[in-house]
Image (cartoon, rainbow, N blue to C red; front, top):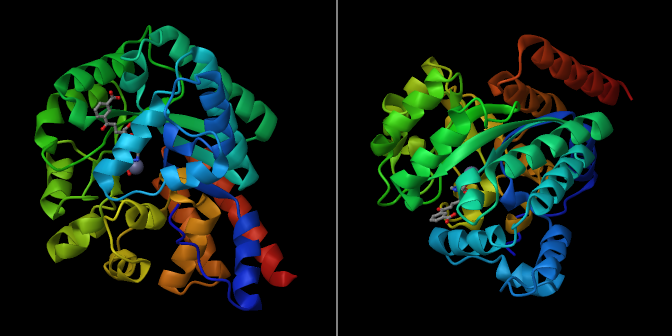
Length: 355
Ligand SMILES: O=C(O)c1cccc(C(=O)CC[C@H]2O[C@@H](n3cnc4c(=O)[nH]cnc43)[C@H](O)[C@@H]2O)c1
Ligand SMILES: [Zn+2]
């Protein structure tokens, strides 16, 4: 596992980490399967012993060390192979929500790739019922509100786009918690414009457009996501920093970036944290949100990502509270939901600073 955690520093760093741990947060870019904790992966691997995924936590840490983005996707798909029944889906979803709640995440948009499950034989209605059951239980038991983003695994071709669009737009199938439509997987050799008709259908059905772009390819992919897929937020968008005109466009049109710093190091999209362009984004006035992407696979969690951001952007508690509010602003919550979490962030921060 890649260790990209912030090095232990003095008391100030520890205090900031304690502040972050209690800070109410929203998470906008976190993958369903990529959130399977070592405990859940072990449990699923034990349920399905023919799998090549190790059950021992140490071996799992090695398994989750990636040579490049393509290797990451290979490993990711071997965890996908562990999810074979609606009960597996329900367990994973509920446990992901428990982990988010532990980190004081009040609201999360979880990216799910239904195509990967339905093509492996999980019944589509059983799949939808499992995620919805877990969503309702999580809200009732943990107070964490979950919403779904269904993403196309682009490398799997237009068949996967058609299937994802069908599952996302058919009123008899689409789950109540679905709010957005995305595009994930490798970008190299997978041009964004070919997915335009599927995004058009999803947008016409009331879904928000949130493709990954500019994670492993240049700024032209982000432009394609904006112009062809009508992106309202960009997943990663890391290479936007190479194009000042694009940064100005993102800032002017208030298109947020879903920044996942540790992910970019773990998949080797960025060499080191110190070379991460997050500071260029904020300097250009882009709305930056902080996210964890596939946290256990990258040896991180959302709290650690906020600590990383605090170091890279030199933030104090108020700066961190503003960052947390960016995610609320950029979310697809309704106005009352946004106001409620923003007020919670303010109350928490004021109480912390007064103590
Ligand atoms: O499910 C299949 O059979 C399949 C066949 C070919 C290709 C794919 C994929 O490419 C699946 C990609 C999978 O990766 C997810 N993901 C997680 N983290 C990231 C990320 O940082 N950047 C891009 N994709 C990511 C994505 O949601 C897809 O589910 C599948
Ligand atoms: Zn992602």
